[in-house]
Length: 453
Image 1: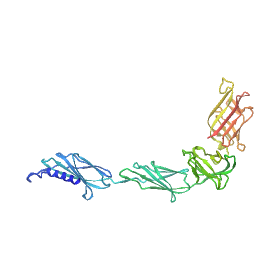
Image 2: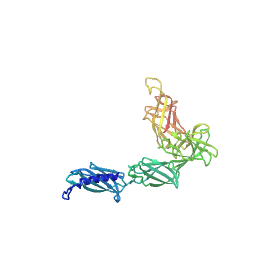
Image 3: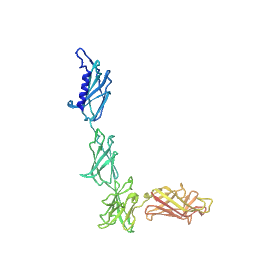
Image 4: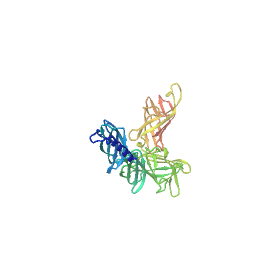
């Protein structure tokens, strides 16, 4: 078909150039040249245009590649052409003929122009930045607007640890075991004119240092209890040593407050039951306990001073294991949710002799001196009471004290102190208190529970 087109417009040129004339005296001036202009190039196309030539009725064009190999030949009434299917980074020559009308006073003119297609572009190699966020290693890089996705792989030594693809310019690895790592990221594309990048590579090491260890009491859901030791590391990783009293059988876990499934992540080599969501954690050579870490059912709160580890478990029955350690005034300081209930005279309803009441809210328990704490929100906000802490007996004693226009004291006697108790979960229960005025108690059957957040 290309040969036919060449013959067609070549024959048309012969006729229009006046070869039918009988004498060399019949000279005809060639038309003005078309003067093609290169408008643009992609990796596989070239676009041209030319100004309309006065007296021209048609244009022929031919594109040739390296070695003058014909690529396309055609005729057109237009003054522009776009040619596709070309090779990238290749120089082509366009020839354009302007044809005069048959038997006109002009002959055909021709003009040529060279143009080069764009090269195939390799996406930019990702430059990786590694950030250690506790138990999470975050790798980021600048996005490439032509990338469809990014393929990554993570190696620990010479062993593949993880691989996959992401569409955003970051990937997070959680709960990595200790070791030396390398991660590579390749920008991937399926857009024409582009090819995937070379891999960007970064290395990092996962190491951990011990921050603190505490001894405490492990209380199983079965009712048994024993001493155990919790070790905390600087990357939010924890090991509860001999968690069921047998040396060498530990519970390993991490705490990640940003994890949507729950802050506790079991990191040991434990078998997982997808039907129940429980992990089977060995406690000796023959036995194990099923632990459910999801949705906050299992959690850890506290620090090197005092705290609590709760584990939702299943052995012979569902229940909760608790490991508790330490207690100090500092560990009791913080934000608490409180609920206060009881009966009062006139205080909450002046139109009634006795009224039941129930209040709740959130307050901060503050340290006052070396051995005392201040509690607000008991009945009125802005009227805190101060108690002395006895850590050995897990009590807080509130001596009679001014409470606005009243006296805070035991409901039994205005000269008697109120003794609150501290629970294993560091909750504080203040019961049997009253507001005294002029020798008369205005509150009975009171009970206030402060639960630490």
